[in-house]
Length: 257
View 1 (cartoon, rainbow, N blue to C red):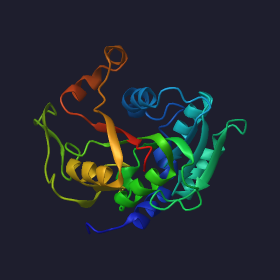
View 2 (view 1 turned 90 degrees about the horizontal axis):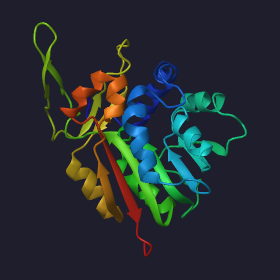
View 3 (view 1 turned 90 degrees about the vertical axis):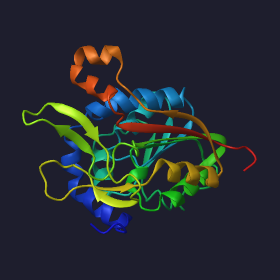
View 4 (view 1 turned 180 degrees about the horizontal axis):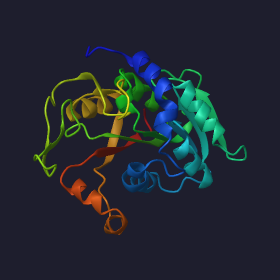
């Protein structure tokens, strides 16, 4: 497909598939979020009580609700109106969450230095102009605030990557291809639909360069893997020791910026 397809095309697809995508979610998200991402994100956030937090790309709102239930004051934005409808429908009005329609590439309605923490869970890969999104996150953070975001691992989840299997379905190894391609391609979801969600791939070098050029300081980089406790109940996740699915960044805004 055209590598230069933009964010607006991604938004249209998320709107069309929002209900289908959210069917597999509970209050912990889907299983991959519960096993890999949530523990990592909350470890990196630390205590959230009485913190002002931006959920940048909140989707169906599950993470916003988890944060609010732990005492955080959450502003939640998403570019998909259908996702926001689902989020609001599933959110208790007593929770300190305020939903907004907006694209993380431009959040002009939010004032400078508003948030202690910005969390962006599996969202940056859904934006064509990720460099502008990083600038917006930097603008919105208070001095010394933390920006934490997760993405599909850019070194392993690439165009045409996937398991190479035997004729009987045994997984031999994970194939990576087209790593240095930067642009748009279709993810595998929804698995039962011809039209797929769009993904904007870029290299790890491009991510690091964009973040440092924006002024962020990299504090931690995590490649989540399943715990032994998780493997007791979900032994199929043992294959994730062969190849990382996700990468999570924790960055800090310099107090002098």
